[in-house]
Length: 112
Image 1 (cartoon, rainbow, N blue to C red):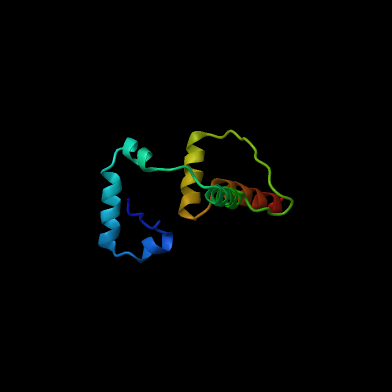
Image 2: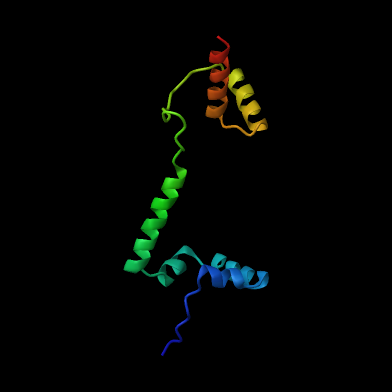
């Protein structure tokens, strides 16, 4: 009769010492993909449901927040050097490219 090993939860893993975690990482890294596949099993119904919920939640977190009347994706063309300078400025100031363009347009339109 095989000894059934209790499944480890994330909290169980977090409670391990760094040395124990490294041992587990090394044990997994030493196995081939075929070995890992042989040791795996299909998800249970409860695990499939939990995975689906997680994927939906992760997808929802990737959605952009609505500002004003929402947003719309646009495609624009600009000189490469100008784009490089804009990207460098945005990165330096912690902005995304779209945020930089939107803020620049707001200031330009407010000035006119």
